[in-house]
Length: 122
Image 1 (cartoon, one colour):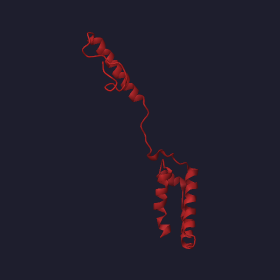
Image 2 (tube, one colour; image 1 turned 180 degrees about the horizontal axis):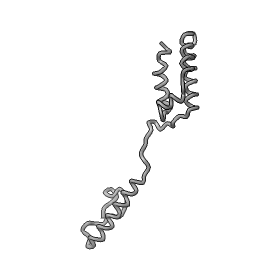
Image 3 (cartoon, one colour; image 1 turned 90 degrees about the horizontal axis):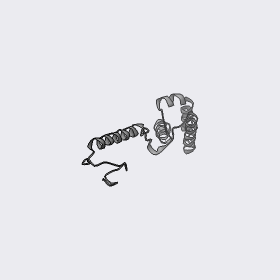
Image 4 (cartoon, helix red, strand yellow; image 1 turned 45 degrees about the vertical axis):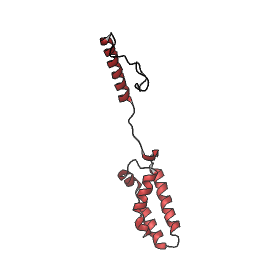
């Protein structure tokens, strides 16, 4: 017999030197087939970085408005930046944004907003 270190599935493994070689081989093949079926039935291993949830349309709209508000607060004395920010927000189309950026998370949204609004700050 094998110990649990050599047998990661914790299933009974027959020795290949047993007297009943045909029956043992058949059981081993059945066991291997069952293990293959279990592996095939498992869920796909999709991993999202950081495990963050995907944002909805309402959430994206909310975060974009908050982001523009923070830019306006940061550059409070600069009227030109406020005008550019308002103009950018007026042109923002959430449906088009979601189509070009499907399955977006909050961290992805922050990176995209930073790169797209960089011209506002300059």
